[in-house]
Length: 129
Image (cartoon, rainbow, N blue to C red; front, side, top):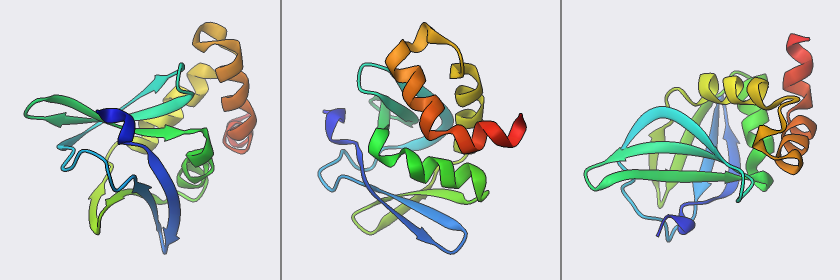
């Protein structure tokens, strides 16, 4: 099940930030859609893949958010890595930034989730203010 499709580590290599997927994840995930969602129950951002059997997801739980902050602040390329295979996550930056600005001050995502996003992504939010 997709619960295993969680980012477990982050590694910066040059202008790329590698998000290491749990080695037990469903692979291949499919084609990147360029879309991101939130899963407020899991306190996660979710990158969506189109797969022949439907959609599959990579979950960015709160312990991986600093890597997402770096993607936005350093204008780095986000790369998903699973068992030595790499996959660029096109559209992640634009989608993530839109979500963050939509979540700021918006408790429709849940007060706890919104507060956590505002705290971790504060450097990104301050760039635009």
